[in-house]
Amino acid sequence: MKTLIEIYDERAIENVIGPETFRPEDVVYLCPAEVAQNRRYQEKLKGFFASRGLDVRLHFAECSMYKADTIYNQFHQIAGKYQDCTVDITGGTDAALFAAGMFCQETGTPVFTYSRKKNRFYDISNASFADDLPCELEYKVEEFFRMAGGQMREGRVDNTLLSGYMDKYEGFFQIFLKRRRRWPDAITFLQRISQVGREEEITLHVCGDYVQKGERGSRIKADESLLNELQQLGFIQNLRIESGKSVEFDFTDLQVRSWLRDVGSVLELYMYKMCVDAGVFHDVVSSAVVDWDGSHQRDSVSNEIDVVASRGVIPVFISCKATEVKTEALNELAILRDRFGGKGAKAVIATTEYCNSATRHRAAQLGITVIDREEMEAGVVPERLRIIIKAGK
Image (cartoon, rainbow, N blue to C red; front, side):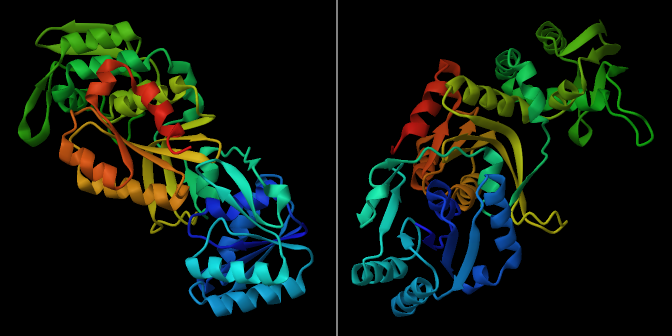
């Protein structure tokens, strides 16, 4: 084929799989006005394809996506303008698919589709080249955001450093589990004792009172057993405790300092390692901050996703909660999954609470898998992730 006609879909992945696989000279997107007139998005899409090594000319044909007659006429106009056309009906509205069917039946234009369940392309009519063709594309985490016009910003974690601590994460998580209810106070103590003023440089050395101020005027004593376990783990060193009076130690490095001052890091790091241990993902990112439109403006919409992993063309979005799972958290996760992953994407909520049936039911309604404390304690999280990524395939 020389020209691929794509029916634009709000799920970004539906718009790129066909062009990437068959690599035509021209791609014509039948799309609504807000896309056809959005030069910024179009340039981003061109940039995405270029970064993937695809030299293709992109064209955007404005059309109402809910009027079959209008779409049918637009198909004819495109076919008259471009050579050797093929139609991809992977995405799009019902009206667009109906119009595509009429057009292809009348003209004999080849038409194919992609099955997310089978991860294969199929010949619908006159497209034998696509029949039962496996999709062998692989996308990195950041590419799922870029294909949707967004951009991944640097989050709280330098992912290039994470592999150097792989032998620490489970031990860190076990330390947390033993004092799960007291963890916020433990982190508050570490925050207070290592706090620096505006004019002071951040230092790895810590020296302070045995008792620190907590929230709402409370007082938090040093957890001596925690500090000793953190030293055994290798997260702090040179620990000296004068019981009731003072505490002194050194953070191993700045990354560890950051984790020990952030109440949510321990579960995120644990789930990051579980994704790696599952052995089925080719990319895993912790603390993925997504700028929805890639504008880098202060008022631009952005979200942080605790862990994102990808296998082929399927992303898995994981939200980590050290507290009870709220409906708002489930709704937010579902929106992010649908926006940046499409129908094939997976969503997981990981919680260190024992999850009740009502929460599981609500999660199931949204297509979200729950991994709770019971599965973490049983050591079955990597297997659960392997099952999740294979579900529906």
